[in-house]
Amino acid sequence: MTELDQVKQLDAMGVDFAGFIFYPKSPRYVVRHLAGEQVKKARLRLGKVGVFVNATYDEVMKQVDSYGLDMVQLHGDETPHFCEQLANYITVIKVFRLGENDPIDWLIRPYQDYCDMFLFDTEGVGYGGTGKKFNWDTLKPANIDKLFFLSGGIEPGDVEKLREFEREPVARKLFAIDINSKFEVSPGVKDLKKVRAMLDGIKGTNK
Image (cartoon, rainbow, N blue to C red):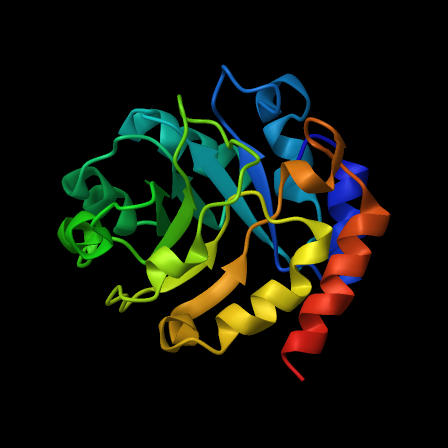
């Protein structure tokens, strides 16, 4: 997110989390758009998630304090030890970018005791989102004991697919879905009508 007014509108809609990108190479790099005090002082019910890519411990903690973040999402090559250090102070979400045949249990095992949640995204070149969907079926055989976010090219027409996925045993730990580029009019600026429609559809899956 790069516009505070939009964050407030999403909060009023009932969106649970808003992501703020702290990766300087991203067009959504929040530091170029919003000062920490603006975000920190905003009265919001939603959780503020800071997205970092191979940042130092000091840099992450600086932005946690500056922006009043509730969670951090680690999208780079962060080690389990690094996650453990941060988890002493804030909720940590570790991102795994998955290819078709990646051994998911093997990938997540070293992080199991040191992260609060996982996020599964699509494999791609670099660290940014690809806008492409990975095959959610690859998660079905995995033994995932952490709450997780489902990401990777989720789009407005995916409500029925999400309903189907929620019926799978692995989805017992599905915590939230992460929507991004398919719901934007430009980097960091959401199409609020699409978000509203998706939110209504997702609420319907939980009735």
